[in-house]
Amino acid sequence: MACNRRIFFRLIGALTLAGGASTWRTARAAQAPGGGAAAAYEVTHSDAEWRKLLTDAQYRVLREAGTERPFTSPLNDEHRAGTFACAGCKLPLFSSKTKFDSGTGWPSFWQPLDHAVITHTDKSFGMTRDEVLCRRCGGHLGHVFDDGPKPTGLRYCMNGLAMTFTPATGA
Image (tube, rainbow, N blue to C red; front, side, top):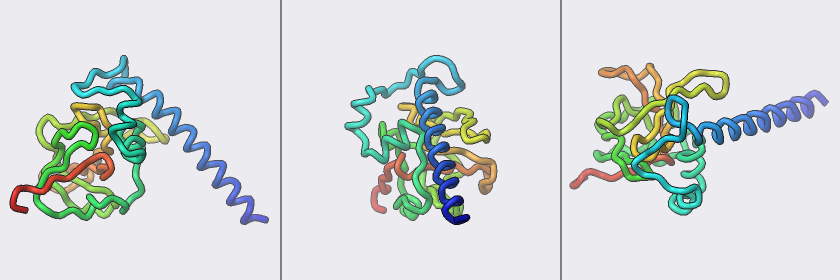
């Protein structure tokens, strides 16, 4: 009986969290970074156009601020020289030279390329984090934390679904 009760409460908790996340994602999509009116990005599409351009999983991450399960992205194990770009608009985001294994299960970098990303305060799920967005299309990439390696001390923890990888010529 106790086992069934525990399963029931876990299910209720998960459904509540999923509903809250959906509400937060809908509200977030209508705001610019830092709050306020809808953001104006260089690359914009209607919701229907984004759904045609992206896979369902990419749409969930880039347009609804979802998170992929850890250790599921092939980009986590990508070690060749090259560039990681936004899966939504193809803007180059990170050089493989700044990638490191954070042990978290997501591709991690200590520095983005110049003028590639913007950050937005994310207060979802009862915590405050710095959300990382593509500067050009506003796609959700992941979060940045201050527990990374030198020289920046930052860990850009990115969703692999939000990016593509292009090997360097000759790599």
